Length: 182
Image 1 (tube, rainbow, N blue to C red):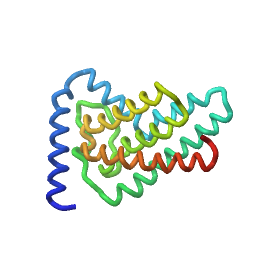
Image 2: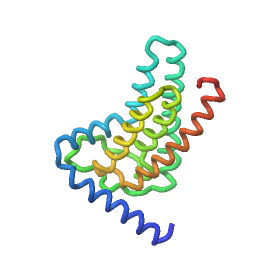
Image 3: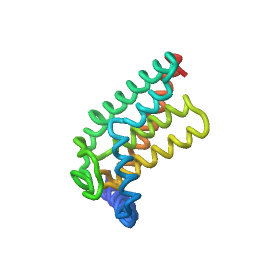
Image 4: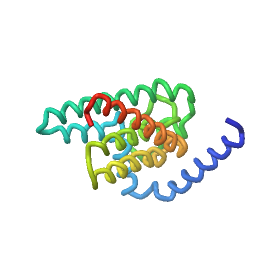
């Protein structure tokens, strides 16, 4: 990466951070960003959605188990593989003190919350129909934006996570199709 592209990423990150600073003190924003970050931890929201869908069906329970395993594999690949290649520092080590969140243990790029959210939203769109599809992507966006809002990620980390998660989601769908779960 050249100095020119690094400067562009920093400019983008600073612009987004500055825009979010204007809303960080609103109580509603504090609650939304804190909750969104928390339900994104370890893909909790996505595991719950998969399990709720499984209620009353053995086939759907099997799909939920496979889906949860896939989320785990996505997380492992991202946190123990991709993040180790970049080792980018976070904007802050513990996040903005105005928000309640867990202190992360990995590097910043790409965002694991964002990757998991977009991976899961993409995979879940094949098990659900409208309007659920829109709702899943709204959840994914909220989780991703919250990570910049709480200052635990740069905006470019979140964008990178969304791209990586979407690409892994495509691979996941190919896998699900191959094992005939779709």
